[in-house]
Image 1: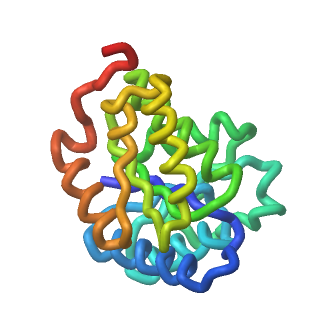
Image 2: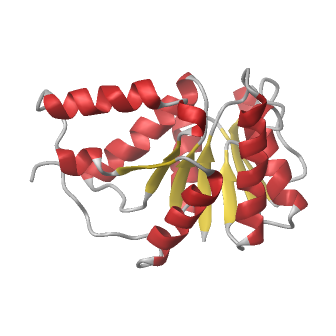
Amino acid sequence: MRVCVYCGSNFGSKPVFREVAEEVGGLLAGRGLGLVYGGGSVGLMGTVADATLAGNGEVIGVIPHKLVELEKEHRGLTKLIEVETMHERKRLMMDHADGFLVLPGGYGTLEELFEVVAWLQLGFHTKPVCLLNVEGYYDPMLVMLDRMVEGGLLLPEHRALMNVAATAVEAVDLLEELMGEGGGKREKVGKWL
């Protein structure tokens, strides 16, 4: 089984972000879970990949040609797939994964998170999604999701599709458990209940 990790191509301002990325990579490798990610060698994404590789884990990277120079593609991976577009990148990452783990990041990370959750809501896949809320990084976003529920624009059942963990161990434990239920496939929730 493989976990797709979405995270920043920068390190961020808190050392804990890098520490958690290293911990996640080590946990994945230690549990025999492969990593699928954006293929870069920089920032948190490079840190997760390096830590997984250091533990002799499988790492598949997917990167568009245009981002090869910006994200400095990682040439030490088990497999690096170069594609033309971001759409191809995200689709291949989703196809190769059995679950999704989201670490701190910026626009790109949020875009990937919401796409994978929306696709889960719409039934385009049934793979679990977990947000690793490092030291409350995503607290304001989670408050906004609760406001969407209160405003009747997001059903509570759909709000629950985004699992949240406070630690790397909790996140990997949760994903491992959910992916194990049918090999990463869960019953479709459906957009309109």
